[in-house]
Length: 302
Ligand code: NCD
Image 1: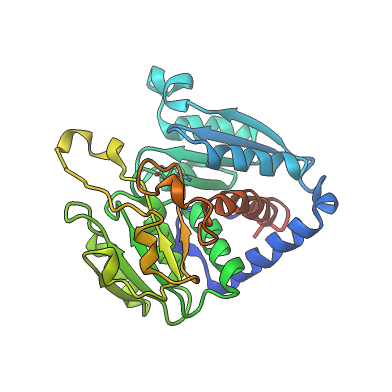
Image 2: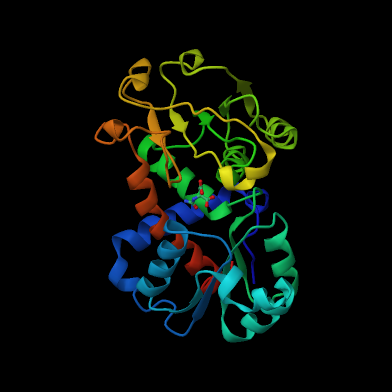
């Protein structure tokens, strides 16, 4: 049994193995259509989701598995009656062979895993981590660049509360010669613990103040939404750095733009038909990477 809780748990070989398996499944989808036919997978979501839940559920169904789901577990499960997370997990682990969970608390996935007899896959834990998103982000970089080593990546937007960013930079730190540029408003910087972690693994971290400070031949811009729901009461003012046809003119043809989505105004729709816009390809990749991940956890027991 293996839980997927944080990007700190992966090795480089595991990531490359997952990318290979994902490609194999993608190219031979029929051969995998009954791969988990004897498995039931629970999707337990205490926070809103479109892509993560639906791509996981599509992945389960495409591998022939069965799905039990609660899309609004905060109000529609016994949590509203005061049931603890660990009690819920102790029950659901009897019904399902794996539990995919999104929750509003940073330590939720770790707590759930400690109570669960079946694998727990963290599908987003508060403002902490979102490891399966990082896997599909890195896979999208790999597919477009042919490698992850040596890439330069600017992280934009909400570096403080953005769990997709926290997981992605930890994952990138497994690769060689990585440069990460951080661009956010002053109120939403990358927490020091993440800077320290990636620097300890040899990543060069460079905070910048505006888009034009970034190199023109940058490999990846990873834009994110301001996580307003995490700081509604704190009065933080967060002006957005907007990517548009005009602001992207600074960069060359090799600068791909990723975004975990959903977006608000931080990427103007006028950029969507630019060949450098990869965010919809990225969300489709998510389904295939999640098929690979489910196969690893449920079939290969890795
Ligand atoms: C993100 C999330 O939920 O963390 N979305 C996703 O999973 N694709 C990003 C966000 O909500 O801004």
